[in-house]
Amino acid sequence: MKTPQPLLSLRTPSAAHENGDVRGISVMMHHHAGRKTLRWICHIAYLCAAVCLLPAQAATPAIISDNAIFKPVQAQQAMVVADEPLAARIGLDLLRQGGNAVDAAVAIGFAMAVTYPRAGNIGGGGFMLIHQADKHRVTALDYRETAPQKAHRDLFLDAQGQVDGQLSRFSPLAVGVPGTVAGLLLALEKYGSLPLSRVLTPAIQLAREGFPVSPDLHQALQSRRQHLSAAAQQVFYHDGQALAAGQTLVQKDLAATLQRIAEQGRAGFYSGDTARLLIADMTAHGGIMSLADLAQYQPVLRTPVQGEFRGYQVYSMSPPSSGGVHIVQLLNLLSAYDLRTLGHNSAATIHYMAEAMKYAYADRAKYLGDPDFVSVPVAGLTALEYAQQLRKNIDPQRVTPSKDISAGQPPGYESPQTTHFSVMDAAGNAVANTYTLNFSFGSGLMAPGTGFLLNNEMDDFSAKPGVPNAYGLVGGEANAVAPGKRMLSSMSPTIVLKDQKPFLITGSPGGSRIITTTLQIILNVIEHGLNLQEAVNAVRVHHQWWPDELSVEQGLSVDTYHQLQKLGHKIKESPWAMGAANSILRAPDTGRLHGAADPRRSSAVAVGF
Ligand code: GLY
Image (cartoon, helix red, strand yellow):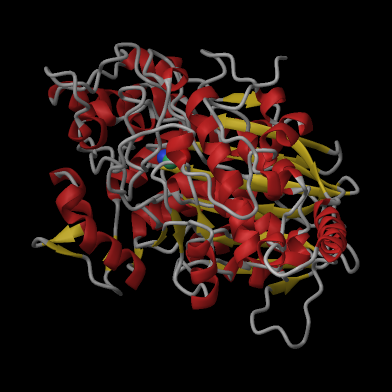
């Protein structure tokens, strides 16, 4: 496959960079030194730079120092880390009863559709990475939504040819054909060990009998009321008020839908009563999804994207997610720098990460889309030679403005809501699952009688190539709308192996920030040697090429902020915490499991035994 060329006209590397000046040493040296001294300083600078560019060794990860302020939960045999405790415990109970990691993951997936309606779903889609211990194999399961057959390239353009965000986000046209049910059923059938009814029963009970609303759910409902349809409001609000924390949320229609799935399998969702209720309501409100779209939906098993970083094998989600490609591309780009010596979240480390991120997101806009519709140069983008080529454009002392790479118009962001959970069982099977409705509570639409919320994933297509979507992501032709096509995603469920055994299970929500969040978890553990909880808690940064700003979470030191500004970064404190990377690590020395729930989601838990 042809190695992709860097996009557009990239800056010629500066003379300082040609001399290997990667730490800003040369800035100080030219003024006062004589020629001989200057030559010596140049040599020393060059050597330092060379050291900095040598492939570094991995830190010794997984050591939990007594002094550490944050420590992961530890367990010997099995672990679940998820955004919602009732669902996490359902998964853990199945593991305790002899179920494997896939049984647990499927049970959690269905349970979160009940207990975590802002992102847990049966009306959306997602991706699951599965490590089979007995086969030493990692498989990628793609259950991303598809565009209905009546969709077309200009579906979301108004009469003036402008993108209508309301249509692509909050109308029946926003809804992609849901993939979650087919995906979870396929996972169970191929890799699980328990019958469907057993795995679904806890979710059905929670929906039928109800559960106490958590403060987190109450708050989420309060903030999104104006986006929820009348049918959805009937479920989650009483007398116009979001159910209060502690009140019982009963979802009878959802229980009936789940019961039909338990009894009829795929047909209980993609045909019969559920399908009829869904399509009747969509059609009545101007939707284009048909019974045939539902009947034809198929999840796909794909080969994950694979890369190597400091002796670890990184497996992540392949297209139609952009996640795996760019995580591997970024690790390749950054592998030449000794970030560990430069320091975790130091200005120099963040500078290299941010500059690398820009090139990755520029490539994302141009090359990434549904591989069943467009040719995605995965091998080229993840090749070490390509990283080497791109790295020449990274100036250690100065920001390369995004406008020198390309241009775009930044919109505001929508709050990114997706959910990731990680599961590991005693046999070494592992699951990294990220699924979503796109926005919090998706499109807010719910067909009366079905009880489940519908996604607004169609907004992840490029409604008009070159115009950014809700996450500010600029897309290209490769991600234009087409019938039956999957919209490009950033979801990046990731499994890192060491010596063929799962070492790190991770991933995150966060829209466009999913890729950079997941990247930083990997770097924090492998490069910086942080324990898993420190790695998950650490302040995150993000650059997505456009808008041309370095987004940072609260808590970056003022000194670092100023250093980065001196290098030319336009820094913007993110209005949200970035992602929620619920992760598991198996300590190679003891075999113990470390679980880290992300504190950015107040309800997230790590549970194990
Ligand atoms: N809906 C966000 C994503 O799939 O990346």
